Amino acid sequence: MNSYRGPRFVLGIETSCDETCAAVLLNGKDVLSNIVSSQIEVHAEFGGIVPEIASRKHIEAINIVVKNALKEANVDFKQIDAVAVTQGPGLVGSLVVGLSYAKACAFSSGKKITGVNHVHAHLLAPFLSKKGLTFPFTGLVVSGGHTSIYYVSDYLSFKPIGRTRDDAAGEAFDKVAKILGLPYPGGPVISRLSIEGDKDSFKFPRAMLPDTPFDFSFSGLKTAVLQTVKRLEKEKASIPLNDICASFQEAVVEVLVKKTIMAAKEYGCKNVVISGGVSANKRLRELMEKTCEAEGLELFCPDLSFCTDNAAMVALCGFYQIKEGILLGPEADVYSRIIYS
Ligand code: KG4
Ligand code: ZN
Image: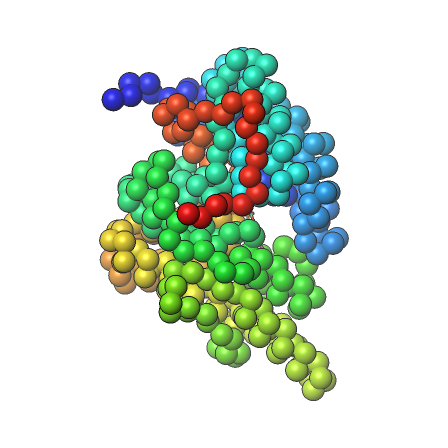
């Protein structure tokens, strides 16, 4: 048995997408700092993330973000025992900035370094918030880049059981927002407009994919919204934004909830986790909570600050890897996609 209790202070670094993040985690549980520098304003102008701009912005921000994380945690870099960095999946240019920075920090000072899978970090994020989560659990990761269901049996064992065949749920929110002339990112604004809308006013499709019941597909839904808007424009009718948003949101949420609950039952899990940017969605939380309750399951969502991209979850995931001696060497590279076996 491994008697090593794990690193005391872990510096987490996350640059997989459009947020430069650093955090300091104490003893694998206490978040001493969690700094997020968002690039959303820069990308909003283009209606989506521009990878080249993202990597440049990470280079500009990373040093100051890490320094701020150390300062807020009141920890000197010398006290840091190990560095945990997102190695993939994500935008290659953005990941390279974080990994190179982390390697430079670690190898120049003889500290341990581990490479974290961003999706695994999202799955463990609820451990930073609500108490009582135990293994095994069924986890839904819903973000701008991912819509996947996992069976998680311990801090190091993640079995993918479903994933999206086309767009991620967050991507669908962002694309539908674009169709409706709404700003990027689409999730928060669609969620806001939906409050005033009627979710039953438009019958948008729910792709249940009976042959692969834990997989997702949102491209048909996105096309259905586009066709509805085009039809209304042709008829010179006004576009009922709130109703379209509410109906679209309901179609996404219903599919996410049904498939996650189905997976939890199939895999015999009492605990359900939702994480990733889209898990900030109020309607998703509400319907998932209600359905879990009805099915005798318990739902665990991270606090909002740990739902979207952050480095505290990376430090947490990294803590358990370092504890088990899973470390990176200087030759380590990033990976843009998850290879499903
Ligand atoms: O996890 P995240 O911050 O970054 C990625 O790893 O992608 O997720 C960002 C995504 C965006 O697509 C955004 O539109 C979506 O999360 N999002 C939401 C909400 N807040 C953010 N989607 C639905 N409802 C929300 N309230
Ligand atoms: Zn993410």
